[in-house]
Length: 109
Length: 113
Image (cartoon, rainbow over all chains, first blue to last red; front, top):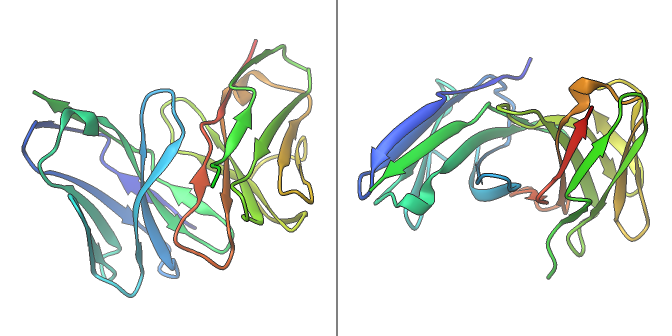
């Protein structure tokens, strides 16, 4: 079955880089996503990567995909206090997104 | 271009009652999905509608049902509410041909007492 695992918590200082990790199990996933959720809000799509890519960069965000190990990571450069939120990794199946439980990122000044 | 809007934002219901949650999809998006997010958890897939037909369903009982209308708005109906149905319900729309992402609404917070 499909399962997505993430570490639950990450704390960094403002200006540092943050790396959030995710493992997934469905090797047939075509797209993998990173979503951000701020308190009381819905999900904001941050970035996505197609399964035939191994890296994607989008401004401060870098996504790395290791298909062999089914490992996905999100690196946020120059992390700001406004980046404090919960980050969800998700894999796409036929008609569904399967999400991890989310990683809470806390950025301290 | 409008985003995905959901109503109401908050709702309190009593166990055993029925509830209808509404979603207005992003303009041009013909696919809508509903997710349940319990406190401290990731969203769980309930079902998806494509061109007014159910196109996939997660592990939710039949008392969770939905409709999608020709204007691509949709409803999630839950009968015989249970305390465990308390959660944030998220609607997401997409244009099927564009697989790069789903646009989520801000959700409806349902509390069952």
